[in-house]
Length: 64
Image 1 (spheres, rainbow, N blue to C red):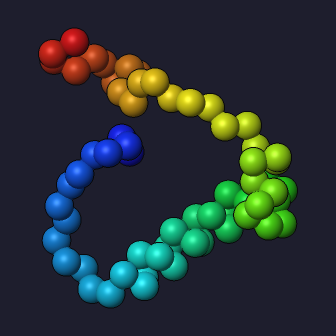
Image 2: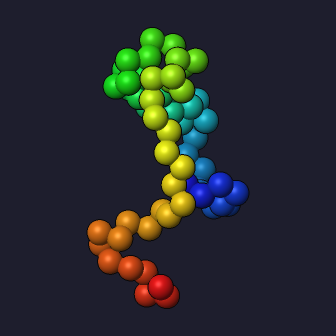
């Protein structure tokens, strides 16, 4: 998602489940790249800075 972007979402209960879901995603990511600890992630993965978030595969946005 865009840095600094603000959205409002409806209340879905305690934040604990959301945090646990995020942790599950991080664990999965670490497994894919062979990192046994989160601190190893930058050494095991190649991070790519994205300058465009529109998927051109599905066509350009109308205002482009």
